[in-house]
Image (cartoon, rainbow, N blue to C red):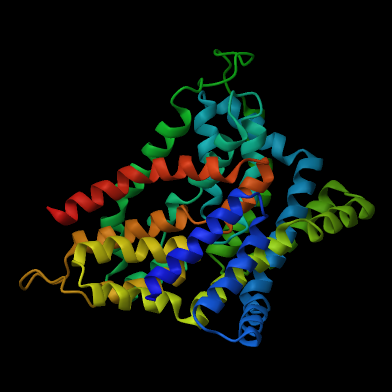
Length: 406
């Protein structure tokens, strides 16, 4: 049985488990075991690989960051920072939908899994009086957070991809910027098409005042600090959030008892099993050789370069939900294809297709941490959210595919 067939069987198993309302963490753990067995791994080796992956430094950093972000969310909500942001933006910008999209886009400057959880309460607050379902609110928070990954050169996937393909960052930006715009437009059409600009109880003739701008600056200060600390000064997000928690606690005089309650609530939430399941699945994919086997399967089948550039990054993205994994596994295969055009060098249309397909795969992956984090916050149906994401992903992938074929 080829690696491609085995991977499809595991993917089907995961989809069935999620449709049976099994939690993502448990579903990923079960899928990890099933994957290991299909690739003839011994039970002890399966468990060992899962435990090792969960206990990796990067996994522990993600857990720490998410727990601290949940604590900070509680503090910002309790002290009124969130209301400052949403209230002032509603006064400054005439379109509430624009506010809802801008908030996660701003947090998208944070190259971390915790960003989605950071922006979720802001989106929830600003859309509280709009006729939007939990699934559409989840889509807004999830979808508009990620277009920045296509153009901001601080994301690991962009850095690794440009290096593997021998592509300068400026060239990468030129290739992906049109798709960045397409992604934003397609997301807006999917979620805002029948949504009013703002709620009926907000005055249309209201003009922003100086106090609105001050409130906006005050509310954004904690988030801006995290963005600046992580992006410009390369401080670990868990450390940056910890500093903001300490400063906010002292500034607003948050009681120690309330802080302890927030920490306990965050530590005992479903975040822990979810992250463990995702990281265990990622580890089994690498150790079992499943991802590497995909490229070999395509080579054996003798499929065209266009199909490989489209399907391989898409599949790896859906399976791993992890940008650097796609960059490290799929992109070397793309770089090795016959993509030269005379003496012109690389075929940029084919590379664009690979990049956009990998992005679509990541966005449609249940293993992408931002997705379950967002769905969990809004208590939405994962399947319905994925339907919206899939629809919004079609335009950019279709355009890239047509350009590669033509």
